[in-house]
Image 1 (cartoon, rainbow, N blue to C red):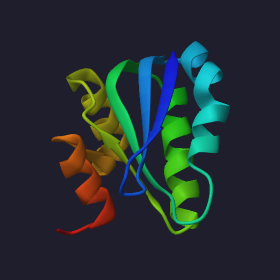
Image 2 (tube, rainbow, N blue to C red; image 1 turned 135 degrees about the vertical axis):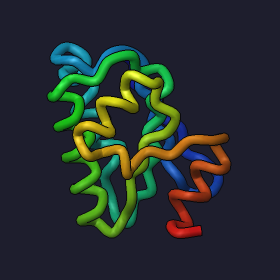
Image 3 (spheres, rainbow, N blue to C red; image 1 turned 120 degrees about the horizontal axis):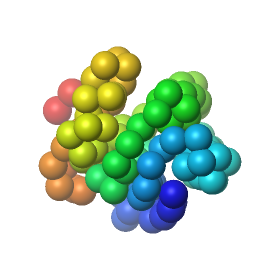
Length: 115
């Protein structure tokens, strides 16, 4: 599992996860993922376009990050997951945190909820 981080010009943090969020994948990125979600009022876009599988441990990691970011006044959305991961997110109840479209469209949804 690979984790790449990039800060966008509008203050959004883009975290790209490539690989499987299974026991090994979560173990290799969890600490770095949480660190990139820290601070006050974080706006985080988790790019799941390269994530092929999402286990219960991956769901736990994402849910914990969503809760932590929200408690700090921020927001975390998952961007462009592949169909099998979208299904898993929908079944788990996390589908409400999924956004599709271009990077700028996804960032706009993250920065301006409800528009």
